[in-house]
Image (cartoon, rainbow, N blue to C red):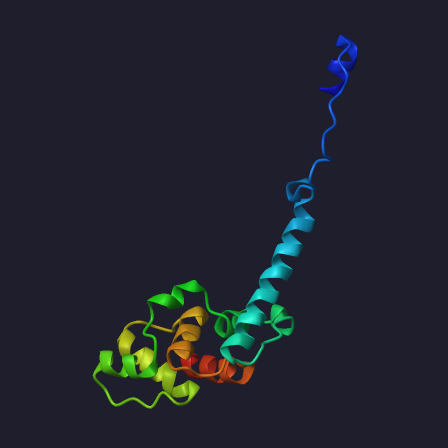
Length: 145
């Protein structure tokens, strides 16, 4: 546009330099967005009084990562272990990872099969168990039978 104005004899107008565009470098945008998201999650965990999980070690273990940090679909699960016990109408001990998985299997029925890791993670969240690697491993072992 400035070239056209120069050729037509008009003086170019002063413009602010263009703001850096995240779309100009999608790889940098993705990594910075991921870093910001991870930082935001850590801050939210600290605010909620939960232990902060360094999930960098879990990248190599995708099943554990899915269990320790289940997807947003967890919002459709009961908010607490008491709600799940009431919904099932049973006296369930959900104070352990194994108990949470047994409650999940009882709710799903006999022909449901092995629950996927993210569903096991939602059961652990519903039972209000800490999101640690040990809890995830114990729950996955119980789910596998």
